[in-house]
Amino acid sequence: MELIVDGIEGLNAVPLAGLMLVVALGFAIGRLRWRWVTLGPGGATLFVAIFFGAFGLSFSGMYGSGNPQMTVGQFGFALFIYSVGFEAGPRFFSILLGGKGWRFVLVGTVVNVLAVVVAVACARTIGFGETVAAGALSGAMTSFPTYAAAAEVLPDPNLLIFFAVSYPVGLITVVFFVQIVPKLLRIDLTEGADPDPDDEPSTLHRGSEAWRVFKVEAEEVAGRSLMELGLPHRTGCTIVQLQRGTTLLRAEADTVIREQDRLLVQGHPHELKAFGELVGPEVGDQLLGKPPTRNVVVLNAAVCDRTLADLDLTKRHGCLVTAVERGRVILEPTAELALCHGDVLELTGSAGGVRGAAVELGRFEKSVHETNIAIYAGGIFLGLLLSQLRIGGAAVFGAAGGLLLAGIVLGRFRRIGHSSADVPRAARQLVRDLGILLFIAEMGIWAGGQPLSPVREWFLPSLASAFLIAVIPMLAALFVGRRLLRLRAVDTWGSICGGMTSSAALVTLKNAADSSDPAVSYAASYAVASILVTLAGPVVVYLI
Image 1 (spheres, rainbow, N blue to C red):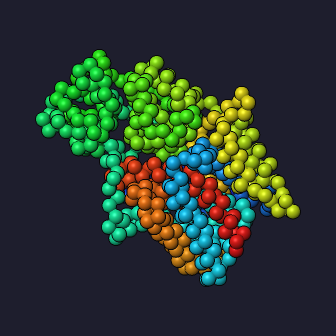
Image 2 (image 1 turned 45 degrees about the vertical axis):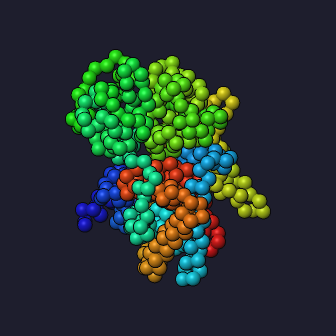
Image 3 (image 1 turned 180 degrees about the horizontal axis):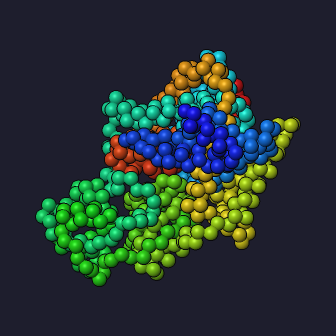
């Protein structure tokens, strides 16, 4: 213990190094996973920061004893909140302007509105204040945007402590709710859902995966449909295209495989080996082979809300959609998938065919990794200016609202005159994740050095409240989705997970349903819920 104290005293001489150590440890621990449950980088950083703060790490050497106007954490807050709006912008407007995912959004909205209502009801019934209520709400929703926005209007170190103690309650409740409640209610999550051809795709670019061509010779494969065979689920490979004689066919779920068909398959080496053992030998082929692949951003309003089957890019342009990215979620390109503004499609085919499809859909995603810093920083500048607007002495937006609004607008249009406001996906993720980790690390270190006596008084009530805030909205949303909107089980649960903005719950749901279908409703619900959860924190503070 003395060694820890001595080490932290040494870090106080270089406080920025201490902050970076907290972020590094939190991120590393947050990547650990037990089954499908993980604290995530944000949750782990939260606990690591409080631990270091309790043992004496502070920023007095960096900021002095006063109240600085600008800190590293506040800078991280601005980066994070702006990034939330920027990522949500394309889908947020398309849904508001009449997208077909409004039912998914409604279920997610029910989750967020009732979470605020339950938090306020618990506070008034039990008698605790806005600090406990906002902390329990943030933890129950496992939402760092909720906490960050609440902390802006409520600079109380105990807010983070109550968030920390409620966070595990929310995380465990949501994950186990998805696992247990369908079984208790005898809900079949697999009903109507397509089998998942890939357990957990994480990116459009699949890295070490390779392309191979196999000739169908196995008797158990010939004469059966792809859905019946379930080859992607059994082997982990993705069937990209099918050649029958000199004709190229799209690999649809109802496509019946015939002997001597040739299949273009993508997968890791060990998966490709298993595929060959099951289907037939690998062969060379002049017609099939690894075609060029480009990412295309959907911007043309004429193709939004149209399904891939309706567009039929394979027949009209000779190219194939192999993956769709919507926000932070990868979707399987099923025939029934309707496109949304801002979707990124991975297209495979001839250079001319892919180019023609790109012109119809929108434009190629820029392959360069250069970010227009001037436009990105200018958006944050605009958001901070909006935060200074006041009516009768009261702020109209606040920092969180101003940054969100600026991010949503620039995220939707992503262009000012001839200047592009596009930000590569990797850059967006870095800015978003680093921003929240810096903010949480600084707030956690600050909160860890505060006395814990107020927390002990309301410790158990905050845990009970967090449980109610998590469970009641999910049950109500389940009723709305299943009984009132008549949604499929996987769509209802995907919308609930999106409303909670819980990626851990989505992974659990996809495994329970053995399908990627929940990702569609999750993405639609998440687009609006990411805005609502950010606004929920200040709303609870104002209502109490």
